[in-house]
Length: 287
Image (cartoon, rainbow, N blue to C red):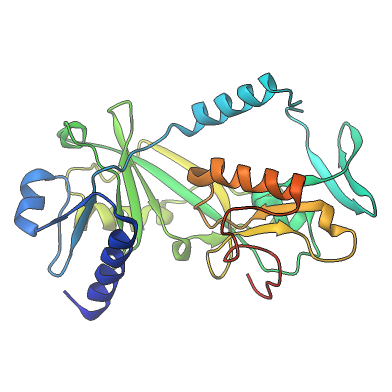
């Protein structure tokens, strides 16, 4: 194991110990027998999170929206927000359907953060991401154990078997994605050369997968330099009525219930009992 890999492994194990996570450290021989869908290289180390799992994002979003409506929320579907205007005594939200005023607005603009808040004092890079799905040639991915994975080096990537038992989804890290440009003009066409990195990953580490994808998806994410999100009120006179949640660097969705609680506390009480100093917009000079 090289020095960089040793440092990464040490950091992972320290975090596991700090939080008391249920895990296994797998040796190469045990890994090959238990999970033959992965090919390891000399120096690789493997940590298995015994309590890891997955969620179905589409069903999750629909369920959350339906529950919000049951609790009294009003959802304006297919309504584009054009402008967010902080006022001395509230916030004005301008959409294609008109304008509404609120005491406080929680703004979660995703990749449109720079469009809706052009004077944001922090830099958020919006990048164009590609996810790809590949067929398992033997079905080994769909046995009793179906772990998702993250590989940290030399090419940072992740993957997980799809719940339907047909394919395996692969994705890449921030450094391998291009800047998106105008989020309203996203190029959703995947060029053949953009798939070369996937073919390389499959050839080196995932020998069971067929190297040609059966499905592709292009989308966007907002990244901060620190990979820490921006959570809290906008700075500036009158902007305190806008609670921003943006720049999650790919880590937002899985933690959205917690961030939702934090945003509600900030909007209603002006503070949160959660330890958010490391992500707070208060006194933050850089993203």
